Length: 242
Image (cartoon, rainbow, N blue to C red):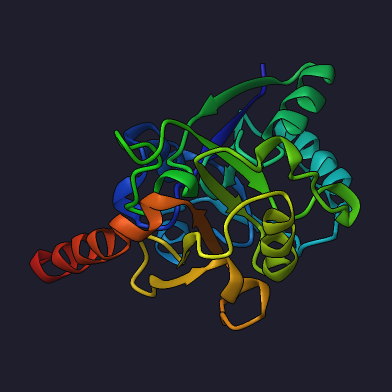
């Protein structure tokens, strides 16, 4: 029976791939990958690879991806669907799994390190943050998220929020968060191009922070305490790498 592996590529660093993900990439006859998968990971693929990445707002493309997955699954003994981060965290992996299952295709999920967890900042810390929430900056069809359920969560992690960062900051302040609340944007976490930008909510709301996608935005007290710690850790790793 044909089988599709929904594989998480992690945030970028190839060394963060699971052993199973690495083995599947080396052995798969065909791999369908997302736009933001790191080139160092794509270089591991020995078989055919198909770029099915889509830009923000191209929601209709997902149906085409479903059809491609089905076509390749019917033609090969197994197929890898490679997604950035974890396939089930804002990766639409659940939709693909349901579609394939409805057409009699076996599905197995191979988890990956989500970008949510790759910033080097602790999302919980005793005395600073007793919990965290992950929210998207954009919903299906380009809709804006309802931030009310998350307004008072100690640590907020915003994905896909770079383009709407000013609106998100303004909305969070309107919902009661302090304009002085610290935050950190981490661009391209775990990659050689990683960059960190510290800013409070007021600065972001006023459009004073220049950020490039993809970036994870961490909002809360942990951002102030650990922003430099995470950066120093990444630098130290780079310095001792062979």
